[in-house]
Image (cartoon, rainbow, N blue to C red):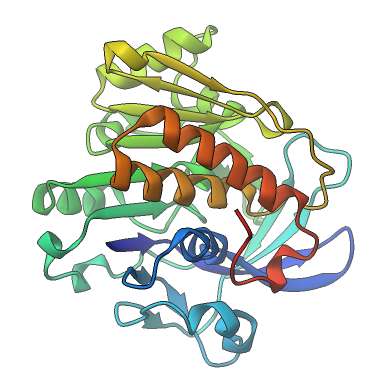
Length: 286
């Protein structure tokens, strides 16, 4: 299997604890490596630089960085998670769009996963270009596309501009419950899901932290599937949704089965949440 993963790598500063760790698409790459078999190839299109590469090297040395570019300054985010349902984020060194134009042979990929880590990972124009050149599955994690930002770098939730055009290019969409409300403001979750799928999305995944996840599909036999939360001790709140997404996508490409893939993704997200010092891992036991 050959999968292309697109998203910014970020230096995470944990404001609650004063620690600096690798972040961003790092955790999506970890999720893929946790699922992978010997013959799989993961191409990572991200930004990197020599000054901070030692943070990412234990994991990034195991993926193909041919499409990744050297950048002057890595994006940085100061994260505050204590006692909040949605973590607070303050960004520094917001990078521009990644250079997706380096992708040449689209037909070689079994799937493309785009994780909007900063919200500026790719532009709408670039997503349309990818869609026009690629007929395979595109998985899209809304992530920080759901947040605007002020002059001080604080990220605040807002309605996503031109959202219908984004949705028209996506096969599988992932968001959490807060991000869902930045896509569509209908009060009922089921009606939001129907509106999203009317705009082109085939499968919608909504993560719900300790309450598991729900899947909506335009396949009548799998209109709504629920994966309840697992009984775990939560040791980590960062990267769990990223591991969930890559696990679902990998399983779905192999099986084409929503139920199997949702259950595996739900377990993978719980495994990430229960893992202490997740940033020290290159693989999670799934």
